[in-house]
Length: 242
Length: 242
Image 1 (tube, rainbow over the protein chains, first blue to last red):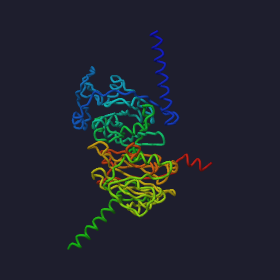
Image 2: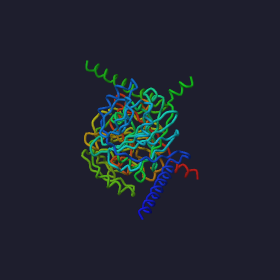
Image 3: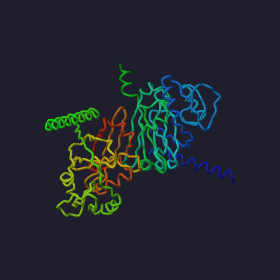
Image 4: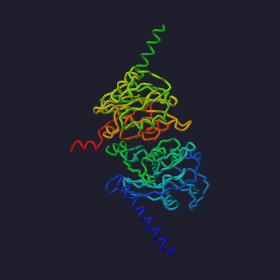
């Protein structure tokens, strides 16, 4: 009996996932666009003061040491850490992607244009929705964060970070788009480097910011579909042409 | 001596205005686009509860009576009032535009695409920046409002209202665009009818919302340039074709 109940549950989950995929595809109505369902992670890490160290060491291209509450130890003992999770891991920039995939199970998606479908938007802050995006020969980290900068007033912050140096980041432009009920919101900017620390990008407000009412207007049944596109920025393109 | 000081002040003001025009034109770099410098008005009116009456009478096409602190009496005694200012005026929808121009000195601009340059963004909330926009045979009211929905946390809300009925409003799409320092933010939506009350649109958050940090990122020397465009919506266009 338990077996049947579990099977039935699994089938229901699959149907629900399929349904969400279908809805997101319908919203963006772009043939061949990859839809990725992203589940939330309740954030345990809040140490924005550690970002000062990140800013200082950015020029040397070394990721700063961060000390968090929850320690997911990695056998490697290289001098850098993962920028998002409560994690004592240290390593070089080149191995950040494999660390995020392996230790934190962050999905990586291929393609110039994808749809990020964040589920369970109603969950209380602090909550993160995270994926990696592989595109134009680089890896990007998309972070959607629900956070209460002001008590009792949760907001959503969405940004894209290049898993690379600030100089490399300047060569790209990322676009985040929301579409629903004849409303359209688009944010375009240069991605920040992962060396700059996602916490400081969000506390500066240099990202797509949605308050709860706007997030609800764009959500469908508790899920928010964000269309993502990355292009090489114009400056870079003209340099290429020269 | 006083005369010379005043003259010098006036010349400085003109130079400053000219400089702001030039900067806004450079930001949007669209030849022939009209730039309108909009000065703030400290808002004295805050009566969101009165909007319930507006919603009820919308279907009859009658503007609701509003009772505000500051009374600017109009000799007309028709059954409606101006939706924005603290004003005891009453009149029909057809005469709202002339009332706003004559009594409240709100400028009206012609053209499908204009640049709204709001000055003195640092002024404390509540503050409004307002112009009317005449386009496609209709008049629209653009409202930028600085308001503290949450104490100590001012936000900017920008929306466009049609000076017409909700049915007429459904035929249009308005676009608000911000551009600066390789950042781009675009909001597109159907304008709301002025009969729906601007206060309720802002309290619903169904508009372009900027927190202070985003507004600062897009501002130049305390002024925010918003590119505005109005088009007939697709549904309407296809109906026209039929």
